[in-house]
Figure 1 (tube, rainbow, N blue to C red):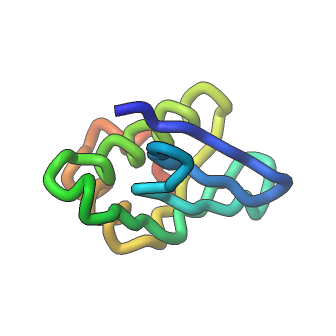
Figure 2 (figure 1 turned 60 degrees about the vertical axis):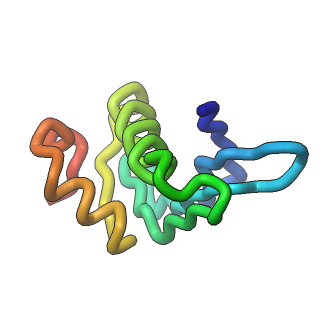
Length: 94
């Protein structure tokens, strides 16, 4: 599954697209140069059960590591993933 990324200014999106349609998305904002707030994650029926949400969170974690960011997972799904994955603690904002 190809997770794509788009950022415009202080807002961004990790997403899965097929035939021009977004099937899954994770929306974030950048309140400062070193912080990313994951606000919302949504996965369409077409991708249910394929771990698209987990893959988008993992992609965001990898992005944060590469760019020296800390993540604030306000989205309930992303927050739950962070609680299950202690290996993501290095990018979790505290």
